[in-house]
Image (cartoon, rainbow, N blue to C red):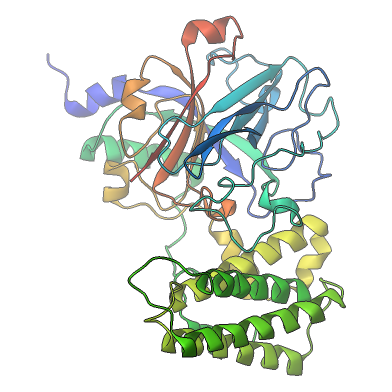
Length: 429
């Protein structure tokens, strides 16, 4: 008797492991043994991996971005998993993803647990997130000043077993996938509007919750100044320089520098009084309105300035969470809740399941994995060590939820615990 399509897909089921990050980052000193970001607890005999990475059309040798540390003793899979049942995996990768289907990567394995060694300090040649001047780089973070321009925030991980299925763009497969994920994660939360994503400048103008400390003012001013300085730089383009626009840009530059000087004299985490807060919002709105008047002569869109503000708010909250959990008491509740809920499992739709593309980033180990192109097909005979989907936790360098970063290993190599030839694939829709 011929099997139904549902039965055929059921027969492809493989046990796999969902990798769930914390909603908010933690201090670097947190005792987690498995985590995204932060600093690796490398054995002293391991060197921080380097590779040739393309930046600005040239190749340069740099220390790779540390992506994740996973203590295998915390990963469920006794009796069925091809992974070792103990030891620690360390994942490193180039974070320059533009035009890179196979970014340089290294995976290291130690037989010791994830808490056996202290944090390894980052090397001086550690690449900035998204590269020296990458398209996804956060321009207002300065690699010479800002730790998190090169090192992602630290997110502890937890693990849950689920069944993964082999299918591509299949409604029945999607039903099975949704049922399995909901069995593990629950039915999901309703999808709501993100408070800061795609928010307009006029909405920020009416919102009195920001700025809530001087660190946020610093980041916002730096974001404005980065655009002003680029727009003041002559370029060959159809957009001509205009004397009036240049004068306005210089005025904005002077205002930004004035705010930065004021920030330097104050403690970053200190509150901002109501009058100063209103004055700063008025300055920011003037920046937006000035850019709108100059739109024929500049490269920066007013929507980009608003987007940067949202990023700066999130980055400030992460910085506060990393400093001290009590510091979050000073964050407006709506901003804090908004940032945390991005990591929550959202109620899936039939289309989500059919295309294996959900509103929540699904990170996983083992199973088939998912991606918008052909990596999962091409590596069907390999073992998926780790899949990290585009996640808003990662700011710009890996925040597109339509993208997927995979680490693959040959089955025989895994049996030998030989991680020297792990391959990374990066796909984006």
